[in-house]
Length: 281
Image (cartoon, rainbow, N blue to C red; front, top):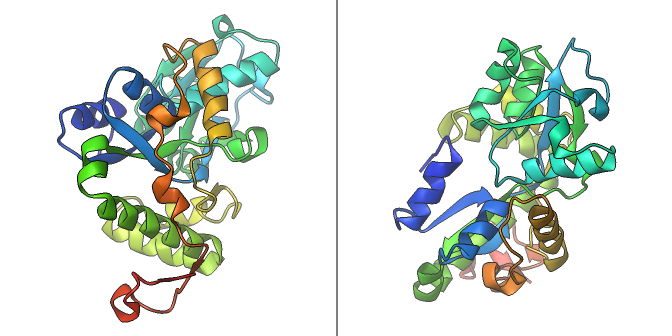
C-alpha cells in the first residue's frame, strides 16, 4: 500500500489496517510512548535526505536561513530534528526560522512557488528540485549527520508474536536487496528501471539521479537498528520538544530479526533452489 502523507500511515497502523510500515524514526518512538503496540525491526536506508534552497536564491550557508521558511515532512521526522541540530550548531534558536510541515511531494512545488525558502526531505523529492532546475542542495545529510536515519520498518507486536517467520523473511529480503544495491552502480540503475515502472510511480531518470549523484547519496547497507543511533535521536527529540518523554530502547526496538540476517548471501540462486531461503553463511 502506498501512502502520500505521514498522518494516514500512523492512523492505519493504530487502526490495524496494516501490520507494518516504513515510518519516520521519531514518529515510531512517539507512537510507542502513546501506547501503540509496534516495534522497530530494521531501517529503510541511511542518508538519502538533503536540505534544498532556491537555485538562484541568496542562501549560501545555513545562517542565511534566519527569518526564512523551512519545510519539513513532519514534526515527528528526523529531518525536523536535524534542523534543530543545525540551528544549535550555528548559534541560532527555533525562533530564528519558521518551520512548517508540508507533505513531501509538495516540497519542490512550494519552493518553486516561493511559498517556502528551503525544504529538507527524503529522496527523491530533494533530487527533483535539482533536476527541475529550481533547487540547489545546501547540505546532504551524509555530510552533516553521517549515517542519518530517516525511515524505519515497524511492525505490530501481534504480528511479531504470531508470524515471526514472516517478519524474518521481510527483513532478510530488505538486507539482501540492500547488499545488491550497494555493491554495483549498475545494480542501482537496474533497480531504478524496475522501481520507477512498477512500484514507486516516479520517473526512472529521477531515481537514477538519486542513486548515482553521488553514488553514496543514499545507502542501503548497515541497516541494523543500533542503540547508540536511537539514543542520539531520542535525546535530540526530547530536547527539541518533539518527543514527549525519554523511553528505553527495548520498548520500541526488537533487534532479533536484524541479528539473524546472514553476513553472506548467495546472490546467484533463488530461494527455492537452495532450500535455505537463498542464503548461505
